[in-house]
View 1 (cartoon, rainbow, N blue to C red):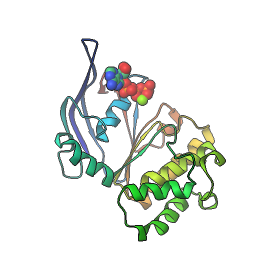
View 2: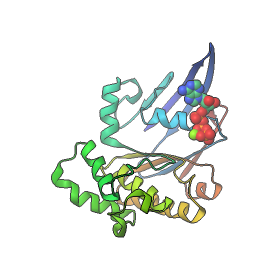
View 3: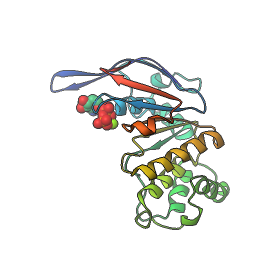
View 4: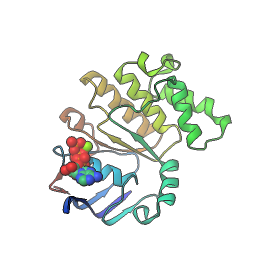
Length: 219
Ligand SMILES: Nc1ncnc2c1ncn2[C@@H]1O[C@H](COP(=O)(O)OP(=O)(O)OP(=O)(O)O)[C@@H](O)[C@H]1O
Ligand SMILES: [Mg+2]
């Protein structure tokens, strides 16, 4: 994915708020890329644009050979469903479904054929080290385990880009380190690129590349 001169301006009560002011970035295959910057600097805004949940006011985002940011909503949704995965700070699991069923749901929604579900769900839960917790529901799992289910869910349909907004913010240091080990593992085994935001200096150390947002740009 490449990001060229991306700007995002919000209108609020007659005022224009310039949040992104000319972002340049490159996400290369199989890299762990992190975004840092003070609260309100625009990290989530950028991540939303990368994922096509929002569109830039100006500039271009290219993804997998297509002019992602200038496609219409339907075209962008197709690409997002097929090639992207999302992980949020608060795990976004369905509370009444087991770990297994949560991952299966994501394959169902991605339109993967039913015959492939069983093998892929098992594979993904093993990848994140939850083979012994497959049939637990979220409330029976620790925070770190829930986040690992969320990762299994996000990678199940084999995206090439994983976007994660502060995926370790709710976790203690030990669990956060486990999540980072899982990320490093799936970059190799699933050949995915990960772009995540974090405030945690110890986590920033494991990045292949860190972009720092200052006043709407990378410094
Ligand atoms: N839909 C919106 N309308 C108006 N302003 C918005 C909107 N979304 C975000 N903003 C503003 O854009 C700025 C950047 O917000 P953003 O959520 O991207 O920051 P962030 O870097 O992710 O912060 P944090 O570290 O706290 O998560 C903030 O000042 C926010 O108020
Ligand atoms: Mg944010």
